[in-house]
View 1: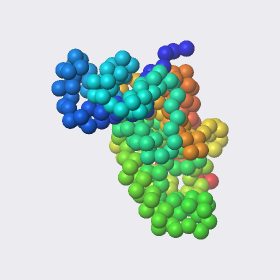
View 2: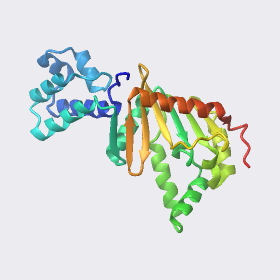
View 3: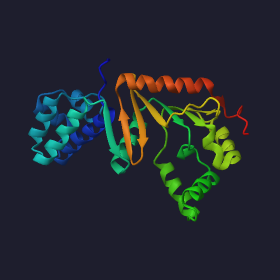
View 4: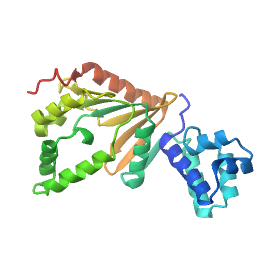
Amino acid sequence: MTKASPCLPALLALSACLREARTSEGLGLRRLATKLGVSAQALSLWETGKRAPAIEDVAHILGFLRVSPAEYNRVMRLRRQLDDPVSIGSLDAGSASQRRALEELAVRTFEWAPHVVPEPLQTPEYIQAIAQDAAGQVDLDQAIFEHQVRQLDQGWTGHRTVLVGAAALVPAIEPQLQALRAAADLPGLAIRIVPPSAAKQTDPFTIYEGRGKVFTVALRHQDNIIFVSEPDAVQSYRSTFKALERRSVTCADFRSP
């Protein structure tokens, strides 16, 4: 089995902790690097999550900065987690920030949405329909407002390919399809529809491709999000995405039943 790349979400969390530990002591990056006896470039790569520091380097930094024992243990657990190809987080603010960091670092993103249109692409009519289906009598204005707030937090960077299952359009087919056709013309965004006959029984997933061909798969399961970086599992999801893409059609070519 191929050796796994460092678990990217854990690497991002670790880099943030190292940066916060330094800045809380009022030390500049170059000054700390000099005191540690490492290059400023290496320390910068560690603090930006572009390179994984050795566990000895993490211990050296934390010891020099005299972080609390609780913080030391927490950060060291993050470093050990880098070697674990699976990371699980709850769908809370911390997990959301990890996904946001993945979005910002990804050069390409591939998303399979078989059941629900991704939030940044949903129309008000679509939000109303799924809100009514989910909760019966709901405050639709509030639902739309909350959706718009989440949209602001999900700005997309890099190139993104989104495969939407035809079943996902059902709550409001025509207005949603028109919106997807318009969005498909945006630069850096490719949207395709997977007809029911071609859609596999596959749960939704997102593949993030970082620099250097480092891939992370994000899977949502109930109240958790699972990040997978194990190469064989990643390759399986990439193959599934390519198979779905081959069977998909453009938004302009798709015709609703």
